[in-house]
Image (tube, rainbow, N blue to C red):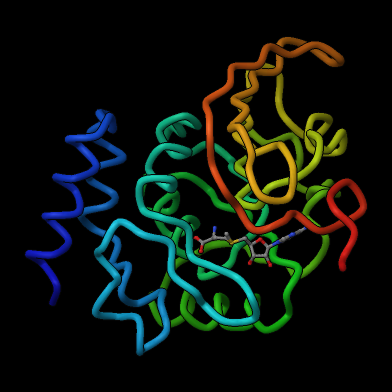
Length: 212
Ligand code: SAM
């Protein structure tokens, strides 16, 4: 189902600047239409963000691909995602052979993601809590990907990143963020690159925005 649409989407991503074959391959294999509400299925392979209910979105495929390529996860690595949402980004990482730990603050979306991971037989560890605090029990992580936009880089997440680990996180104001790609050099020291501009739903939590 949707094979043509899926292959066309992969072509669009490749024509932009996504070049990692492992990322493109994951997009070929993971079925985005399974992660969107029924009335959105016909748009599942259009390169746009879509509403998933509760005021949240499944990110634009290009954004998911860009962040995944920036994270550059290797098989067997332990990756933390903050903002499970629909579960699509977690499924892409799982497809790339990494051990995924994902945190969602909305109980409704957490329950929905649990159900779909279960239906698809995906072994992804999920937790319903404030992801700005990380998941200490399983730290350090080889990579951390934050899929909601925060005002600053949560220090808890920096602490839980392994040395040489990479974190990809949109940081800015509530409407517009730059993507920060951080590599941890040692405890208390990291390098950072930036890519403009992205627009994410807010990262709400202790080290994020306050709920309105
Ligand atoms: N990665 C998701 C996907 O593949 O569908 C897209 C995520 S959506 C753009 C952002 C998600 O982050 C929302 O579901 C929102 O509830 C969640 N979120 C916001 N702040 C959070 C926090 N502090 N901890 C965990 N989840 C959070």
